[in-house]
Image (cartoon, rainbow, N blue to C red; front, side, top):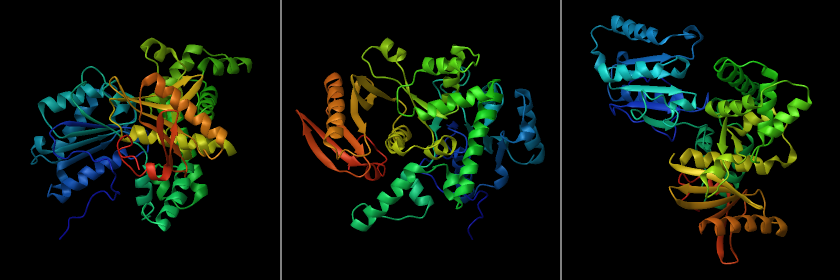
Length: 428
């Protein structure tokens, strides 16, 4: 008889290890499915014969745990041990969900791991969960994973769509749902909802929670209307180099008093909660790269469309945003993504260590000769600067291979490219 699973969740492509004996951290934007990834682990433990009482789950996003201090975490463990005194604590599988809400949580987790238990899973909606920003006490200890909203393949599976890219009917279906994917939300809960008007309200609720709880409350900010305006400006400027100084001057002209440096801090905070992801300009000079105007990509097209008014020319922006998210979702964190802009532009320069692995342009439609020339000129200039010969233009539905000067450039449709989990080495 099959054991009843404690958590009714759908499988995801990202799988956390089971029984590794390590601290496992999973970071990502609110509502992207971090908890579900840990619930999948719990289900697997139950399926393998684990006693459900051997699972300790604490959700720190529960408002009843607001303001919990580090020393109170010991009381959680003690309460569990009093409830199940017969269970050896080293055998317990511990899940701490949204633990970033507790200050200095990492000290408690490390002590717990070193002294009492080797089966610890933690999730958080803040980039400080990642090694690059993790507190010194825990740096180097966890095995880290970064979660995102649904990929295109996951989106199809959540909607029970089966289609083959190798027959005409399947291709037509994939094109249709790729168009929907580009313009819709990919948060798992939203994808499973049926009523469109409720989806918009829910997405606006997500945004407001991120605004008030993850930004204003967590970072002790004030002036919420200015913060909201700033975030919307970043959304509207999606895929374009963004001057925070220009936004500051705009706000100043409106008579709003604020510190320019605070706006730069706010951009960092919005990236720390995974609402935005920053891409710097490529340069052989590290100083030039760091001082250039960055681009900001947004975590979810559907949420953006629910917060700012979509425009008719947004298709190209939404496609480029999805391409970037696909790259970030599947590429190793050690691979750097930048953009090239020296009079002409190439959207993505993908670099591993010192080697430029791939150059990528994104354009909705290159059927116009002028548009195709512009995209080819940009990718060719990036090729000359970087000596990279692996060049790709991603469009919505065109497929071709062209020679531009001495450079071979593949043109692939997004619906086909998005099906591949290895964006650098599995070109259609």
